Amino acid sequence: MKFKLIYPKWAKLERQTEFHLPPHGPVVFAAALPDYVDVEFVDENLEEINFDDPVDFVGISMMLTIQVKRGWEIADIYRKRGIKVIFGGISTMLHSEETMEHADSVFLGEAEGRMEKVFSDFKNDKLQKAYNYMDDRPPIEIVGTARREILKRDLYNYKGVQMVDLVHASRGCRFNCYPCAVSYLGGRSFRPRPIDKSIEEMESIDNNRLFLVDNSLAQDTKWEMDLFREMIPLKKNWCSHPIENKPEVLDLAAQAGAWYVYQAVFDTSDLIKDRIKRYHDHGIGVEGTILLGLDTHTEDYIKRLIDFLLEIELDLAEFTVLAPFPHTKAWDDLNKQKRIFSYDWDEYSADRVVYYPKHMTPEKLQELFTYAWDTFYKDEPQSIKMFKLLQKVVRKEKEANTFTPRRRDLAKRAFGKEAA
Image (cartoon, rainbow, N blue to C red; front, side):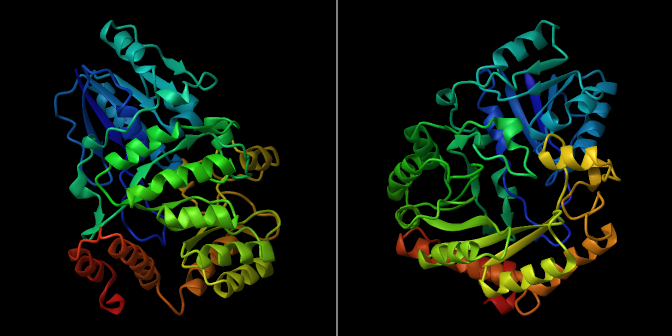
């Protein structure tokens, strides 16, 4: 059976550097497919879809809300040709009712142990309109190594610079942050994979640079430290979401190859200042993720926050405006208060204002979003800051004797003469 798995194109943030990481959801899903399924993966961000290519069944994997309208368009084209389409992925779960209007079937939940039934139903012309496993998650022990061989690897680099491969060591999150849908998607229980399975998968990846995409590694100190200990012999370099702010944890993380972390900077407190300093003291870079437009934010506060970010010497910063995605507390509050003025999912890109902020107009928040990017990168362009972060990993690779000399020339080409 020929199954085409499609990842719809989506627009990068207005100020983001244009590069594409190999998507994680599709390769994890592919590992759950029955052996008789011949899967072809198409990342529309990097290649065109050949709608005339013969195919038995089409799957559309959507991670972001800004992918859904394009995903629906793709499905409509195939269904008009008599080809059945099934949707899955994070944004399918967030927008399931609308997506059903464009689908023969939607799959909601985690795929492991479920695909034999789905494909058996398809072969027997008994495909269900929805397979809902949102409240029936599979045992975490059966999550296997993702099928990265379905990726066209040469497409995933930035001007020749090797990018990271994505991998996860856990699912679920015990936190329930205001703008986040993870508690709805993966549950409030932290579900770590067996460490030996995570290590086996990391070891199998032919790339020294990884991105641990777990929602947060800072959920269970013993597990976190055990994981880092087992990662040390791999000699990989990796980035992740936050790590626990404890010296013993950060020390092990550094030994295990921690390159940099994505750290939410939500205020100007000494707690945040100390956290960033601890990362830096352990040789770990920090890309601050800064969400603008919360109800506590005034114009003066946002400007003070930008000054604070420069003071604490973040390696990089990525600014977004609050996007009230469905199934989040932000959505519940703003929708109930009738403060959302756009339900065009193409505008839920986290760089466009789609609601009425509490202390300013939408236009003013949009203006402050631009101000934040311009001010933070005024004295040192984003490309230079990125190159400096790349230099950190090059040094680590040289120390571990895993560095490929050609990468330096490629890095200079990617980030410009000023970076050289």
